[in-house]
Length: 86
Length: 288
Image (cartoon, rainbow over the protein chains, first blue to last red):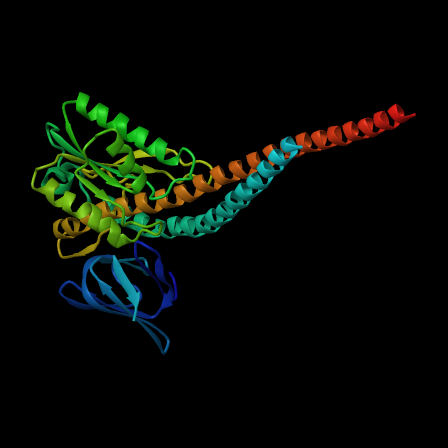
């Protein structure tokens, strides 16, 4: 299994982010969810809010509205019609 | 003499035409590059979305989702035609309008009343000329379509489909197979066709938040919008591809015409010189 999470943030127009991370925090429909390694497979609708992708001490922030988040085998995929770097 | 001047004028005129078509070819080439990049960039989203929906969807439960409802009897269908705002693209727009007419005729034959929505000046002009009324016409979608364009186009139709006012939505667009091959195609966006890829991913034990039902109800409209968005970007790329081909042919043709004209011009010029020499020689001979 992978050492770290591999994360992609994809909007209809382009891939907004693609890379590895230690932790992903997203705003789901009912509040924030944090994803670490070995997370169980999950599919969650997203609300409107911040998405933080942390790799080491670096943190990248995005604004995401709607769409969903999928976690399978340490792969985190975020699909949203509105996703942009903050 | 007048003849040579006439030919010279035509040569100059065709040289200018060739310059213009050559420039248009180069512009289309550079726009094509960017447009086909957008087609490629749209792929991951579409793939993942189809994958997830395929995974969640139980074909037995189709009837529970309004967007998947297969109407027992088709009465009204919306047809969205995507064409370009500009011409000079060879048979590009003609192919699309022809495909649309075939589709409209087929729907009528099946007893379905079609309702036409046209995007792009070329399609609008065609159907106005043929006196086919359109329910909606739009020219504001540029050759760089956005996801917002797609939603504004299809969202009212989704609502009307849910309300049962229309029973199907078809999109006529140009597939972007390659820069040289852009066949017209019909895509039925509503009721939503079965997402192609369903490789038994259902076995995965997901934590679903909220329930599968609610997730699907939210994702299905995304899927519809995305299909329309893909049709828009593919059509935009196909337009540039078709224009590049058309302008390349025009440039090549202008070159051929120029060759013929230059040959004709030189032959005529030589004939005139020969004749003048003959006249001088003849005149000198007459003096002796």
